[in-house]
Image (spheres, rainbow, N blue to C red):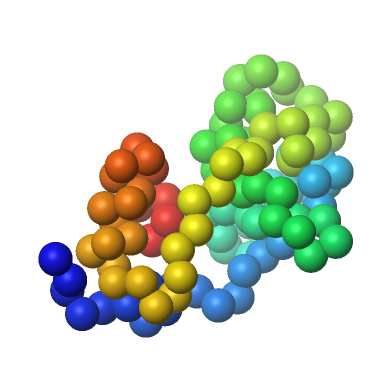
Length: 106
């Protein structure tokens, strides 16, 4: 089933990137400054993972010192991607199949 709305019609094109070696404290400050709930983690133009608000909360639960925990230690490494030309219905179906909450990605 298609709904006629493409992922590219609703996605952001201004991704916010951090290094895998950025601390969770630094990442939290970037999230607040940029008003985003997730950061793309990359090195040398290579996607390494994604760091979400949920990952930050998990880091807080494990340790109070976020300046010693790096993004690479708590980020999600398996990143699901879809083409901007993909239909939104198909993208959401793919996300559900991997048990990714759609509110995180939208």
